[in-house]
Length: 62
Image 1 (tube, rainbow, N blue to C red):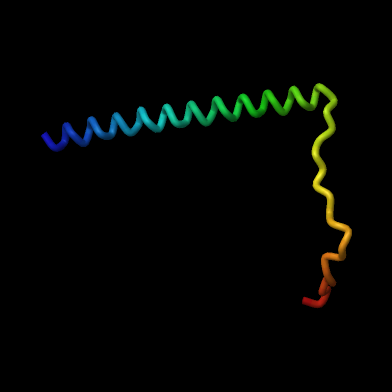
Image 2: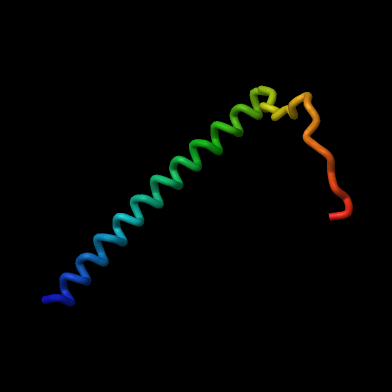
């Protein structure tokens, strides 16, 4: 009986993993489509700008 319970639990976990993977794939595809649509619309991308203050001295001899 114990082997049968392990088999059932294993099947249930694989179904759960499959559903989770499908959800992740669907969200990824939606994000990809959204990004492509923005790029085609000619929307400028957000650019990270560096602050005006100095970041510090670079030690070339390290």
